[in-house]
Length: 256
Length: 275
Image (cartoon, rainbow over all chains, first blue to last red; front, top):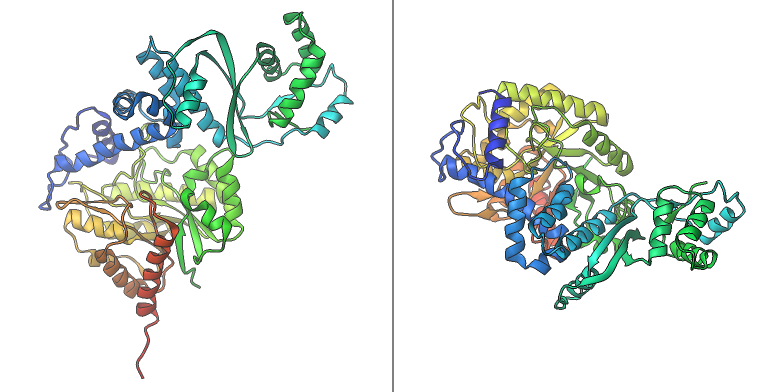
């Protein structure tokens, strides 16, 4: 058996649900059978990946309870091979997996997605944060050609349930509230400020404005689109207020 | 030149190192934990690096992979190496996955001529990318291969001779593998070329009676301290660190273990002669 065949077969045994035997293991007089020796690697693979999921989806695990979460994580590990060198990325598909498992309890996937995006924001790319002085410079530029750039850790997601309340309660070690469908979906902004991941819910006009910023629209174009989509709003005042908050929140990056 | 005694930097001890100077000569960082795009890990790394020499220690290079090295991983490793300017860059003599899949474990290699050729090819690729000798660590293992043609120490020696790479000897891993496979740890130590070894790891393990598991979550046991003494007698004054990966205790406990290592090394390498 050459090295390629050996690594292929060893990996197959590790990834299979049942730990099969192998005839390429040297039988040893020391303590363990070859089957038990293989089982050490077979088990370690699962323990390590489940631990990673427990760590990345801390609030989701607390919401479901350790035993239930462990069962789901085990099923995920068995059905999803890791393809990332960075073990921290292993949970990328876990929120989607939970959405399939909990078709009637969609707050679980919302909570998992929030956990995941907060974790990704933690070590996401750095950037030069826009300041109020930078904004003053922009004000002197041509607004029809000037656009804003979001920080690379910025993400948006939509919640249909009171998932933020559930997250906050778990984060304070309190009993989470009963799940409720929101009167209307709410967009949630996730990003990193300094070293800390943050999130907050958005009004519909702020969500639209940030979406336009992320799409690379110029300031003039954003203003025009907001005027069109929110005819009852004082867009100039609202947009100015939002810009200042975005700068205070470190949501925008600046590169002249 | 000696680099003295170091510790593995762990997040639980960030503030200990940021707040006041600690009695360590250097720190070892897990390369993979800092091969990220940004944020707190890199910011803290930069601050602590300003005060301590560092060695980089990786877990995912997969130097024994039949599929060759992951070029993107190597590129990110090089980027971190340029940022940290470490004393050296190490990883494990193992493979961590095949055909694009990752097992996130230090999988053992058969000690064959074919495997030696594969590892040597990959080591040369890594050394060319890093523009420095790679340092390889022996791993703990729980099985041996029927196809093996040589001992682990003969395999290590062959790789050093073929590539000029250096060795990080994990004394605990020698102890664990020797117990699990029934070889003499002294044979391992005596079989490794003295001038290839540039670092020792000391760690704890879990004793399951019939076998030992390399958990790195216990204090260093008496047997490993004894083997460390033997290693010092054979290799001389080698930079040594205590490595704890789980059940991380307060820093003071690890500093106490490091003091034990200092005392043993002092007695072996610089013995007091009675006049």
